[in-house]
Length: 177
Image (cartoon, rainbow, N blue to C red):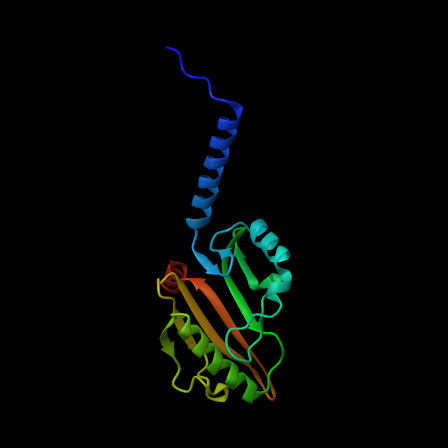
């Protein structure tokens, strides 16, 4: 049987097309955690992504008057794979500023279609925080990402931390699996 001979340009185009399909399947098959980071991406890819976009992660606004930062150690790895992302307020905050961060970040996330699923009774008052309990938790519209926020500090110095987890991964960890 005689098969038609393909031109080199056709073969190159087909290989390129298949490479793009494979790459996009690998990328889109992973759960997006935050911005351009995906759950389960290799630590090498996550660190390279961080290095390439380092300037953009120095000051991330999650609401009016907020400035969070993502640093290299914000990328939490396990078994050489990215598990979740942790951001924190870029500067130390006063108690009043921490309260504003909590309010403005909550408003921002809910404006991005995150649904509040848990909040401590006095969530806007860090001094009334109940220890050993979650502070604020949201789930995104697709139920693929869980965001958790809490203030930490004492005296006159506070920080606000926010973590973005893959929803299913978080549920498995919470259930001890």
